[in-house]
Length: 224
Length: 161
Image 1 (cartoon, rainbow over the protein chains, first blue to last red):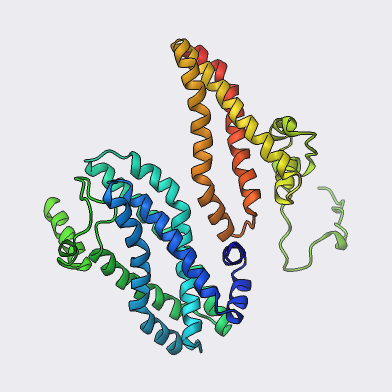
Image 2 (image 1 turned 60 degrees about the horizontal axis):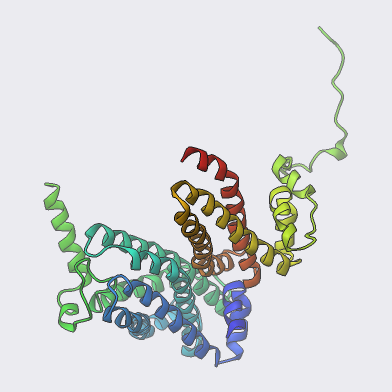
């Protein structure tokens, strides 16, 4: 597994060349991704602590995998329409490689985020917002790293330009992922100590309506 | 008005048409290229870090003597920060000497340990291609350099406090 992860990080071309010959690679990618996501989830959950810690640890890999499961058919179709002739198993390998890279990057940031989350005061809206921005920055960095690996994987399948399917994949995953994350919230836990997860809390509204409501409230506040 | 013609530069010394002239190397790069250092043992690593950074960086990238560097930088990091903590703590009384002497190495070693995973993953993704052992050595070098600089500042900090 260490060798596989070394290839994925250091030499993605070699990783994909090996992955086409060895179907078991998918299992290793899955396990590494789950471990990375669990570390990230534990770091975020450590802000509120107690039950929220282990709930977020379990929720994070579920969030990434459930989003992938929802998006996979559309992602495969996009790849085919974009001119990349791939079998579903190959699409899954590329998607898992990107997701595994993302999760490993998040897992690598987990000690830093965990330190800040565990030491931030509760309740404090300022510290909650700071943690939110920190997690967002880490997420964006990890997303960029994941996209780079996805691009290498697509290129190893078709050899040509892959910009269109890559952008489509990023948009599909982001669009769906935002809603799944909304349903599975809270992640960091509110500054007032939300402890645990409640489905009724998650199912109220959706991500885009939530963003719209925040935007309207903000515009009202500034008197626009 | 002078009628003397300027000397013409020989053609073979000019770059081919359409190619940019290579910029002269920066003085720091020249200095680092000329650095020579081979660690005699873990205790001599500090000298290399201060006097021959180029040679130390070459050893790091070519994975030469990594065990010596890891041991040396680790010891240097702990002892330099311990001394700095003790000196700083001495301002506030005997009890604080021990407390600060323990705290400072914990801060520096802890910071290195927390940053190591993200350093390793992101350097790999951005193409630096260091192995995990090389990444450990690089992070410890950072800690050792920080420890040495702190130790250098200790008398000023003590005097100012």
